[in-house]
Image (cartoon, rainbow, N blue to C red; front, side, top):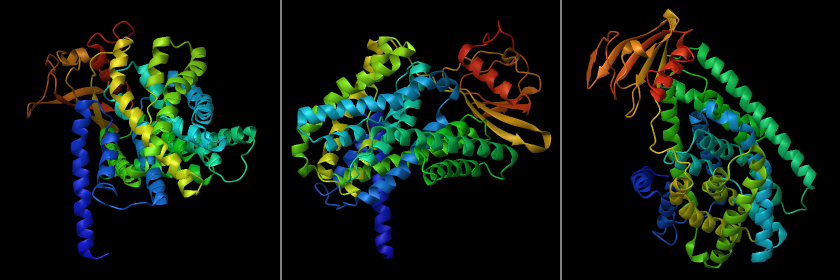
Length: 494
């Protein structure tokens, strides 16, 4: 490759990225998931658009897996353990038993209604039965659901990739299928190995980052993403689920109160956006619309079976024992969004040269585009109709911790978001634990040292110095006042 070719490639890539970034604004205003716009960009510059030829399914699969690792890591880092802990049993059952129900029902519909043979039907059912982490995380940023529902959706989308990948690989073989009990045993073993690797890497990584003070805040995001990648690689090399390993590891790291947490999450967020853009554009390039006409009707039929029968049935059968109200089950049924994951999984039979693999890819592509276009924008409306929307979306209180090694303490940088109930509270009314104090307030570009009667306002930035022993209690108190006002926790003590 010459320097001129490299410069041209850089110019074209930068234009695609800028267009994709601008598309996020369109997505936010219209309610359309951004993945559709990125797929559209790929199709527009592909063979039937500007003429860019790309048909390397193997490269797409490898890069898609890499992007999914980053997306899962970002989602795990932003997942609150406090929110998902109560729903972990339900999410685990939905992501495993629920996936099995969805695969079988969708496969039955593809076989009896579309006329596909059982091998292709089971393959299609497995490919489309996984909810997409990127799509779910993106929609949850705009739909104010109760913590229990958002936590359940987050956990399910983080967990269900693992069993689905195992099923797709099993059904994409050209030889006879393994017995059902062998498949179930394989899934259980790979999930157990992946979870164990994720726990080990997450625990050791969090311990190591607490003990070693890195010389630059910019090194913490690199270290955290390297740990997430190590978890994926370790899980895969041990014949476990790398996707589950990276998600579990990232959840542990995201909830470990590491230094410079907001910087870590911001870095991961940027990488996840790049991963999403690159993955969806590549998948769009791999698509050839001129050859997809015959796949439209099968995609619509299978999609209707999936959305109206398979997903609701899997939610009903797996979550009824957990006593979820029917309204919440209805929303969870509709919120099973598909995205890049099914399309990436559809490249597995392409790479394995399974007969009719291109037909499978075309059906999955059309199904994902059509039903994401329908489900994504209507999810906020449905939440309001079912009366389980929580109204306006509040921003989380931003707290960044920097270690003060020689003083055995921490300096907390606290940003008050619009709508924070800390606004109007006096410094003394924060009732911070012993060993913590607000030392500086930055307001409208000016800074001053507050006293006990200083009234805090929206968009203030506070510097709070705390001992290491009081750091966790200080953060908990600040978050409690942010959500509940100055009387938060008054009746149950400090």
